[in-house]
Image 1 (cartoon, one colour):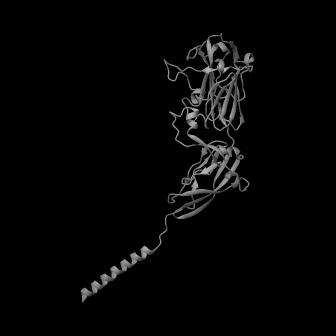
Image 2 (image 1 turned 60 degrees about the vertical axis):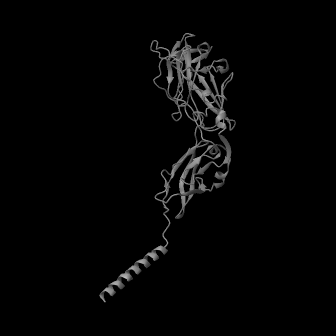
Image 3 (image 1 turned 90 degrees about the vertical axis):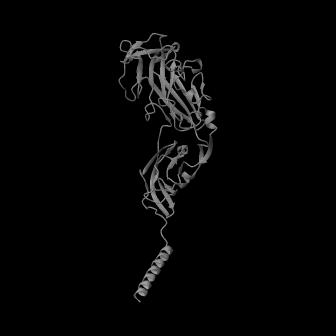
Length: 374
């Protein structure tokens, strides 16, 4: 009788366990987690107007992946809804094939891998939340905008109000001297017909000046129009007389060493060999995209040229240890003036920092204050 009672108790326990398992199997368990406190690591995303930029990704804060992120509304600093302004599309160049810096070295090879599409000024990556702006922000007023997001995953949907602020900020469409570390003008003497710097003589080194706020250079960059994508560089002496590239008055700077490859330091022609032209009054290049150049061929984004000795008289000056913005060499009346170097001894070497960030047609004028055209 005792064994029968134990058996009944054991069977009852097993039945209870089975029923519990069945009940658990019928209970609905929440499918994942979606955090209400997802955010960007920095709340302000600064996007240079007319240029390509990307924000940080959205921090999921433990939410189950994948996420589906989209923007819902955007507001200006007064709180006005400006969805329509950011939904408007503009022609934007995009890649259709992967870029290879080793082989895609000409205008034609790059253009063959690109096309133009009508796109809004920014997009939000649907999985990472990364915000990407493009050249179409050129048509968006400067200012700070607040963006709302909607995020969905297996657990549901979250509305993130004021998820991030996007600041469309003024930016130089062309980076050159004294701008963001892109480079600086450098001026020096080379022994005529060689790649070598001239020897120091009576304390005067081969370098006239190398650094920000070059006292011997007055320059300006003017954006003429939205299209075509063209850069024109005009170089003049102190009196405004143009050096003629077509006649060889502006020439590529030779590289150092024995039979160097390539034979010249980087220059515009190396970056766009099929569209570069040496005109009678300027250097001309049609470029395929921005930023241009895409990648450096060496030593930043500097273009190296010389004015051969037969085309130039150059001043001898004391060394400048540094300079401040707006201070320029004054010629014979300047305290640095020492006289003139003899003719036919030296080539004048010129390094031009240049990277185009915003598409357009540009005119870059450079006046050299320590030389006179021969």
